[in-house]
Length: 430
RNA sequence: GGGGAAAUUCCAGAGCGGUCAAAUGGGGCAGACUGUAAAUCUGUUGGCUAAGCCUUCGGAGGUUCGAAUCCUUCUUUCCCCA
Image 1: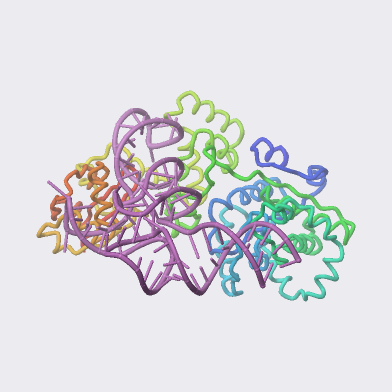
Image 2: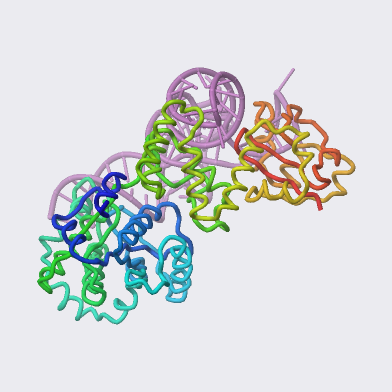
């Protein structure tokens, strides 16, 4: 199966320039995807791009990851994003290294294979570009009429738009086009991939390449990942789902995917895993037969946790999930030794309390608000208890006057605090 | 530069000088039902030493027994005309 065919059945192609498939069949081709180094970790919003590059490399082509050190300073108008902060070069370099480490889990950068991946940073060429050079060598080739015709620009210029568009933002597509041109000339990169919101910007690049060098370049975009309920993909109340285990624990990462809706799961498993078509078809069928078992979600979560973190982390997350959501009781919890207990609750917020204070017994209110700030106010906690939403060590606590003493401690050190069904906190007695 | 409108709680958006911790919707949290889902239903959504008290309606003053509501002024935003 060719690269394009592969992406097509997975539902990962939104737009593709004519002739792209022929080019890919003709020779080993180089393609790039841009990533902003705005943080030192990627989040799951980056996964689609990563998977595209992965498939691309598997198909025998050469991927380039372009770190947008320069463009990150400008701000892409395509997503009506706000003005961005300027990052200093040291931060960008640091982030770039971290990103590369993460990417190396998916893509081969280091082997001797001819299609080993490359990493580039557009800051390297943009920083020495003078304004004069830019308008002479780049700006000359693209008309303002052409740039204004882009959807992203039109939207901002229309009367409905509340915000004007700065010249800097307007220039963004040219800067991105310059990247493409640069990679085309220096790395023989003929294809740019990205999200569908990048389509206009990418085409400016192919246009620039055509006018300046007479060469031909191509574009593939993938659909923006959406959720069936319309909310934004990849964000939870607590923020982004990161790939860095320090930022999002493997347990939470696993839980995120496990909570995917049925409809989305069918879509996601094709996009985010490398499972082949027969396997996925079989899984989908099995899942539809009995959706309650959540075959797809479980497989999706397991595949991704293993790929992004590790098989061990995945197993740990599954075990933790089964304990936290299964029929675990206080007795089950009490049986766990400290090491297991801690591994199950890895990633759960921990609050330290003094052991002496527990010996005498202490009111729940005081314990969970003053001593350990699990809840913001006593009113909030009182309401939770009245609504039957607080559990200690897997047992409902319905008395807001209850005294907590050291008999509550599991493994002599911990108390498991549970808000509702899904939110856990751990008190650790020192 | 001239004229007009507005600023309310997480967001949107009501709010006759007392009965306003402030309608309603959204969002959040929790409960029921379930599959750790979706939909639906219910409760809750400023703080506290809690039938009471305290701090909130852009900022600062003022009028009044009493102000989110009236006045002055400042700040900010939007609209129309130049």
